[in-house]
Length: 119
Image (tube, rainbow, N blue to C red; front, side, top):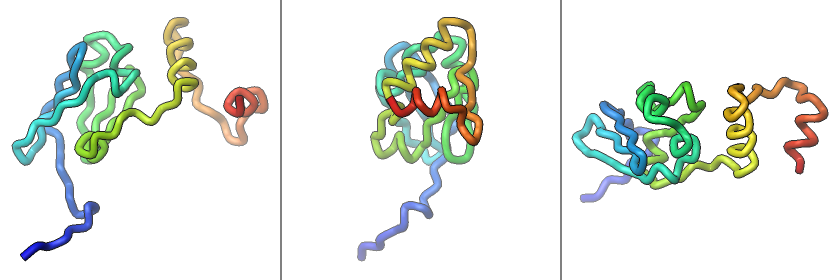
């Protein structure tokens, strides 16, 4: 007999994360290990070894505070790449090259930033 499950019932937690120059590898609590190319996640690809090593494992995913990157376990299992736009990555890289963090938009958003995002 086959039983269909709502995927919201499926909870898989990460137990260990390793990011190398080429791969993101995640060990899961159910015994599986999944891996994805780092090129799927530009912020990880541009991070250095110490930034990649500083990962926080949460109930639904992974967070790299120094890279402002979040990846869900569900997204990894489904093979989803980063959905971040090239413009957003470029803004992040520009701020990073100046040693700054990307500013968090204010609401209502300042007119100059709203115009930049429309481009």
